[in-house]
Amino acid sequence: MNYSTLCIGSLHNDIDQSLNPVAVLHWLKTGKKVAPPYYLHIYPGGVEIGWEAKAQLTCLNGEKTETHNWVYALKQLCDEAACDNNKAFGYIGFDACDSTQGFSPDKSTRFPLVQFFIPKHRIRIKNDAVEYIGTDCHLPEEIAQMPISQPDFRLPRISPCTEFSEDDFIHAVARAKQRMSYNLSKVVLSRYIGFDYDGDLLALFNSYCLQQKYTDAIFMDFGQVSAAIASPELLLQIDAGVLTANPLGGTRAAGENASENSLTEKSFLCDRKELAEHVLGLVQMLAELQPFC
Image (cartoon, rainbow, N blue to C red; front, side, top):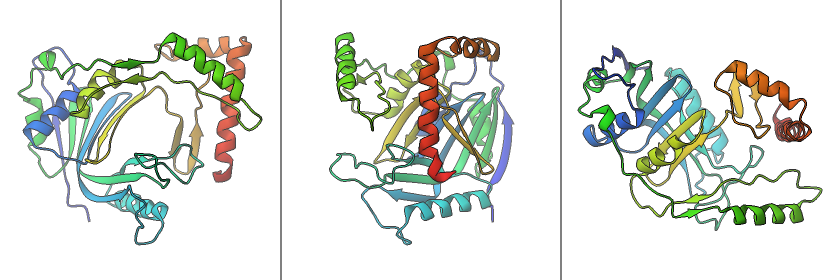
């Protein structure tokens, strides 16, 4: 049975700026004493913040669940959330979607890294309107009157101490070419930036992830494990039993709108390099999904 109370309120800001989602989470942590687990999800057109676990699944050290099957345990948690008109939010530490094992934090052992929870409180922000699902019906009004001045809100700026230089990149390309084999169909070189920082991960999320181009930005804190992610595209989406794959293809930046993206897509068809990359991405994605679809 759902004991939550749905409370809907509208923001009436005196300032000509949208509500800063990082500022809202920072205020919840400092003013409302919100503790892990919690998450912040910034997606196209909206923001969602969830916290306080009604139910939780944790598998960090190879623990055996009651059913000895974490997949079944996660399905049970998701079914419980669905019955409550809620969601389960978290992560699975896989290296690939067809892998059944992950690495421990120190990489000494291999087992699934899984943490999910059903939030007791959720806030959705769209077009400066706040929808709250939980038991504190005064919260939307409090957010509208946040004691934080939006333009002046700042978290500590963190500068990287290590970066992937041009020489490092050239050497990495050379090593990748040497190691290419029949069983290795693709090598992805990602930019590496290191931060010498021991503190609130929200500041790192604010300094790094939100400065990148992203479709989805996610900040999760489970206490023992935290994650800050900025993803340029949604690669997989499952809805009503249908899985939609959108593999990354090409090296050009996304356009400002659908019309610009359409022109870019057409230009790809005349570019052998971009077309080859896109076809390779499709083939690899289909090969990984074939055992499940």
